[in-house]
Structures are given as C-alpha cells and as structure tokens.
Length: 419
Image (cartoon, rainbow, N blue to C red; front, side, top):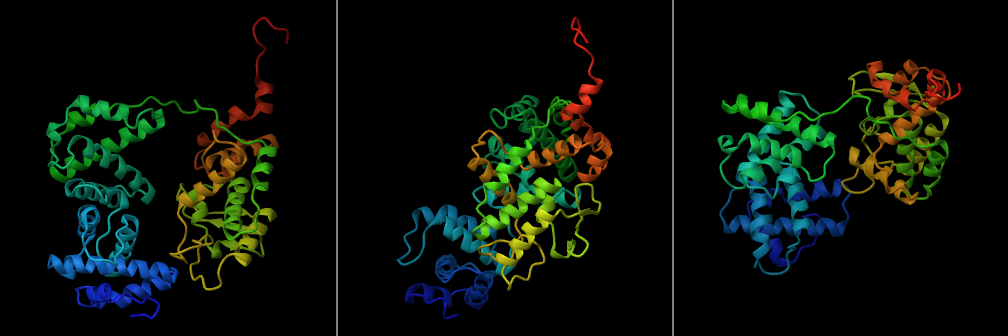
C-alpha cells in the first residue's frame, strides 16, 4: 500500500484478507490523485477496511457490491456496530469513503438523497430519473429535483410497502400537490404538479397502469405570465455587492469572477459553470457561450472588468497542475473537478448576507439587473433579448414593466387629475 496510508494491524489485516484487497492500491491512488489530504486518505481507507470486514463476515463477493450494500452498512450496521477499535464509525465519513469506493469499482451509484430510502422507493425513483434522462432528455439538475419530489410522494403514501397506485385516490393527488411543501409558492406547486403528472405517465408506459383518472386529477396551478415584477438591484447596490469581496483568498477571487459574469453579462448560473478556457478569446475580447438554455451558441463581448477578474482568478488561484479545461474548478478535494451550479448560488448568497440583504436570494436578481440597466441606457427590447440570449422576445417582455422612462411616455393621466 502507498506509504502515505499507514494502517494499524487490525484494519490492515481486514483489508488485505478481504475481497477488496485487489482494489486497495487503486483506491488509495484515486484519493491521492483527487487531492485529498493524507489524514483524509488514511481515514477513508480505514472506513473501507471496516466495510471489507463486514463483507467478510457476511460472505459477500466483490461482484455484489453496489449502493444497496453501502446503504445497508450505513443505515443498519453503523448504529449498532460492535467491531473492534480502531475503525471510524461516523456516518458522514463512512458514506463519503464508500461512495468513492463505488466509483473505483465502477459499481452502480444512486443519488445521496436516496441512500436512506427503502429498496422499493430507491429502485422506483432511479427508474423514473432514468426515464427522464433517456426519454424526456431533461438536464441533471431537473432530474434531481423531480426525483426528490417523487421520493417524498412514494415515501408518504407507501413507505416500505409495495408500490400500488391503485391505492392512491384523486383526493390524495390533490392533497400532495397543494400541500407539498408546507407554505410553498405557486411556482413550486406548479413544478410538483408537472412532476407528478410525468411520473404517472411513466408508470402507465412502463408498467401499463390504468391511471388516467389520477393523471386527470393532478390540479393545474394558476400562473399568469408577466404577472410578477422582476426584482432588481440599483447600480449603487451592485457596486456595494462587488466591493464586499476582499479578493485576498482563492475562494474570494473565484467567487468574485463568477459574480462578474452574472452582474456584467447577465449569464445564468448553469452557463457560468460550463465556461471553458477555450471559450475565451483574449485577443478579440469575446466569450463564446455554448449549450445555453435555448441550445444555441453565442459570441458576446467580454467587458474589461470581467476579463480582469477572470485573469486574476486564473493567474493567482488556479493551480498549474489543473488539467480540467473548465474555468471554474473545485479548490479542495476532489480537486480538478468543475464546480456545480450550487457553488455559484452559494457564491452569490454569501455577499447578499454580508450586505445585510437577508430577504434576497438567487442569481437571477443580477440577470434582471442587467436588463434594467440596458433599458435605462436606451437599449431596445430586442437588444436586451440578444444580451440575455432569449430565443423569443416574448420572454423579454416582462422587463417592460421596470422600464420607468418608457412607461412615463405612454402613461395616461389619472382620471380627474390635471394632465
């Protein structure tokens, strides 16, 4: 074993005399290459040794290792574990270590939100999300969101029992959509209804369930386009937001660069994480945005402040050994991995809190602010649509409600007042 991972005799014997002995070196190398600290590698290897001992006790072959066995160890064995010291028993450490092991073994992996669920729910949700991927072509974040909703639906009405939709009534469907989660907004209820309707269609196609009445019972949630007024930041607030970054740490430099993309160009969070080094043309000062929500490619100018923020991040923070072509990568292990959209949302939320804006959230506030700034400078609605990459100008029409200068021109005098 790599000298970096010295083990005590007991866990070392468990590992080397188990079905995982052939994978121990590969597992250590995987963790080291991912940039984990020596202490973390040692702790994770001891977790795997614990798992190896459990596999030996139950005479389970390596070929049978999957997420189900990992869930069994974490949920059933750890709470009443009596294995001799020294082995980690922390649920978080064991779960993380074994999740990496599944990657090394190329075993089936299910989302973390299903790890504590019964087999019936786990299998059903995985089948549904696979359907959303292969048949519906939905993005990973959308599949994750809808999988969580169906997990809660199945867990509420079936728990550990066999899934029989014949036991579900129209009233149950109505109750779930209108009460999940408690105090949800109309937009959330709409997503729940769409998800439930999609799941019922999946059941009808996959298993031939006769559930047309249940599909019809899913209530439609009232929602009027252009009804809401987009919330935006004033220019002074944008300046205050940007000045809240100290830019003295690697995380601060990275987060500041991401914020500049959002505040200067009005990009979506999903577009920010997809930016590659090859997409930036430093000589021409342009940025290429592929695979946007409209599935088109755009080339847009790169403002000097945004380009400077990116250059500072790449030169001062990004490691020379990084092989990923993504601009924004993780700062800590697993290193050299592109960040997810959740990292962008956290990077935006932190300065909101620093500025005392606890009632504001989301990255789209910055996108709305770009639209407001363009309209106030005299840009046409078509130009705003081009900057925000809207496929239809109807999508951009909502910003006419915040264009006060244009509204004053067409506003009629209040009845009874002097014009």
